[in-house]
Length: 219
Image 1 (cartoon, one colour):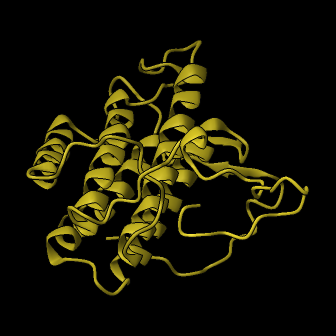
Image 2 (cartoon, one colour):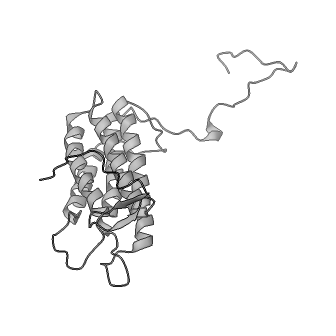
């Protein structure tokens, strides 16, 4: 059981914080950045779940993912140790496998994409785009932490590293959210990117007198 008896502690006023193993680090630590980005992605999922029009088929897995992202934040804040006294929360392969299965499910029957997709569409899909982009940022932040601390358990000379499967989870989650976006928008709802050369000219057309020509049906 988790008991939160006071909202403020004043212990972080000097720019330091404690990781889940109670080791002290700076708030600018790459691991702190990574699990902060995970928390932000989770907050966007919360807004998505509160958005009208979100299909229950999408809402149900998102509720489970919210809990797993909380686990993932704890995972990133707990350096790997060879023989921990108490087994920490860790993301494991079955959670990644479940994301992949959901990705296949939501992608089934959708038309092949002929261009990139722009953020937007239905309100729930637009909100899911925020989930997708913040999840991608969380993955990048986790890789920064991994480059700083590695993937190995702590030694006398080196602090513990990052759980590689936690980063894989973030990668698959962003793929799943993209599939959910397309599912929510439906087969006709994707907003496709039109490359610059194919869009209408930025400058108005001019006639021989140098003045802007009036648009016609032929224009």
